Length: 89
Image (cartoon, rainbow, N blue to C red; front, side):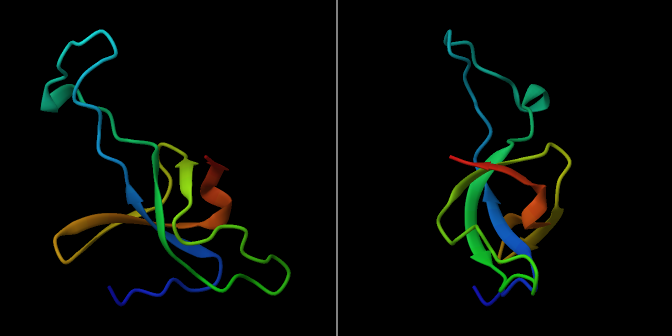
């Protein structure tokens, strides 16, 4: 992939949505919730006054409506600012 985020942006591959609950009940496609965690695929170089804390391969949590959805080579990704990431797992 040839995407290089600029400034303080990161490219995240969202985790797959859960298909089964902890008790074993299968969730239909219409009731699945959008995942709020994913893996960092690429990071920008940061800003002058704010260095990048995230690195490629980090598993992160992000806000429910954070980022911009993009599709590259048939795969879905999210592009968001480092400040939209809530935590590193």
